[in-house]
Image: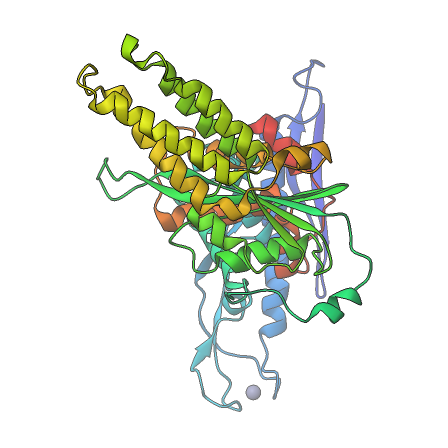
Length: 472
Ligand SMILES: [Zn+2]
């Protein structure tokens, strides 16, 4: 059996019937029933080439004559321009015409097609490259696209294109402001009934730095956050600490995208790091700022483990650092920072005994615990305004922990940017990756492209949020 695919072209000036592809089949086998992947790709490539050729010819034809006097432009040369489409890398004939003598001679010649297509990558291809490379490595993205589409690409192109998209997203972000609260109390009271309260978790994570060939370039900090609301999709944001110039604006735009009103309740939960602490201020008059209970307990647990490992000695029988740490936890749970700090002082004295009594040798383990307790005291002092009565909040069903933020670091950063040791980033590259990745995870990337390219077909939500868990 033979089958042919024929294209019937009906243009303004001519009609053409052209065979583009043919198939042969003999036995009916599961693998020969219908199109194979290769046939499908080849067919798409042929159809694309034919379609694009006619579209381009028609457009050039419309430009061939002077728009003022109607005389035909004389042609200077006929170079080809590359155009990377979803279904193949094309070379388009792009004639260069001399400017007609009746027109102002600002330019000697012009190339209508090249001017019509300033970007040489089809928006849908750009979209797919950006979307998939925000979910998996550049290499895997290239493999995926090349396997299912009749095109050839490479990691450099995908990376550069994704950066371009990130830069365009960045260029649309408004100016940084110290404060985002606007209006006064009377204005806020007149606002419509607000939506459900928002909960925003902010946390930091680390990625490997890249600095030329320097393998000891270390790490740098990235901040990510997620805003959650009952009954609606959550939104994320991310940036590289000490690199981003507009962190507050970024957070504010995320809140705006979730419909924040100034009369709406909003709770910020954070890990208590300095960058994160200042970021959340002046976003909303109804904001409540809480130190994440999960981070508090995690630190106490670590110190208890250290205390367990201390050398035992009859002389210190009465000293029970573990028990005192448990008391610290209890006081903090009830929001009693004052008492918690007093007990921490006691613990410091106990450690002092360990360190300086002649019976106890200066042990590394003691030093380590000493340092951890010092840091914890500073941490609690710096964050004391963010420490509520956790027990009461818990009792009334209010959020006390950002366990979900821990998972945000994992979701936004780790899965794409820290999975492997050899994944190293420049601050700029990491920041750009965070912008496209949060757009993809927030399910906003397609809308962004639709806004940039209004002719690009809209697609229903692809529900990336659930898809990406299976992917990575
Ligand atoms: Zn003319």
